[in-house]
Image 1 (cartoon, rainbow, N blue to C red):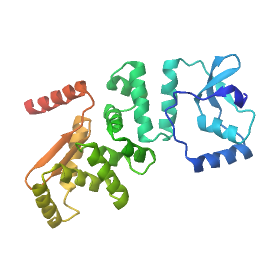
Image 2 (image 1 turned 90 degrees about the vertical axis):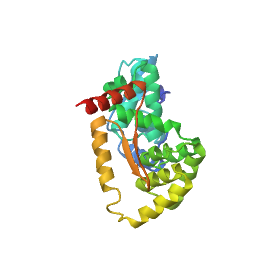
Image 3 (image 1 turned 135 degrees about the vertical axis):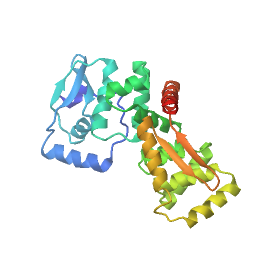
Image 4 (image 1 turned 180 degrees about the vertical axis):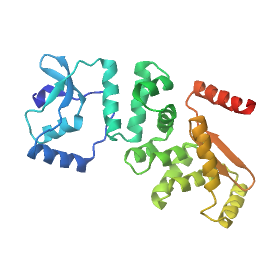
Length: 266
C-alpha cells in the first residue's frame, strides 16, 4: 500500500515518540523494510486511516519508502481508539498521562463505568482509577511525568497533597534530590502534618532502624490492597497513624463500604 495514501489516527492516544528509538527504527526500515504489516481502515476512495502501527508508518515516511505492507480492516469509530490503546498498552509505549487521557476518552466514548471499561480492555478497575487520577496533577508536574522524569508512583504520592503549589514544590525536590517513591510518600506525610508534629515525627523516625521502620506497615498495606482490590497506604507519625484508601467513583466507594461492613459483621 502507498505510504502517502495513509493518514494517522486523530484519536491516537500516544503523543510522544522517543527520537532515539525512532532513529533506530528508521534505519531498520531503510535497510530491511517493514516486517510486520500495519493495520488500516478505508475512509475514502484510495485513502486509509491508521488503526495500528503509527511508529512503522512514521519510520517508513522518514526512510522515504513509497510502499508499506498493510492489512485493511473494517473498524467502527467506537473501536478505533480502543484498538490503538490496546496495541500501545501491550507494547508498553504509552506514558502514564497518555494512558490516562486514553482511558478518559474511552469512558466518554463508550458511556460506561470504570468497571465496564476494565472488563472491555482487560485491565483492573483500581489500575484504571489510579491512572485517571494523574490528570488531577498541575500542568508542570504532568509534563515531568510525560517526560519520564517522574514515575507514576511519584505522581500518585504527590496527589496526596492538598494544593497544586505543594505538588509542584515537592516535584521539584524529587527531581533535584533524586527522591525515591517511598521517600516521596514520607515527605507527603510530613507536609500534611502540623509543623510541631512533623518535627516530632522526624525525630522519632530518625531513631528507628531504616530496615524495620516500614516493613510491618507495608505488609499491612499490601494485605489491605489485596483484600479491597484498591491502593491502600498506611503511614505512622509520632502521635497517630493514617490509613488512606483510594476509590475511583461513588459506586466504587459503595463497594468498599460493603466489603468493610461484611468484614465487621463476619
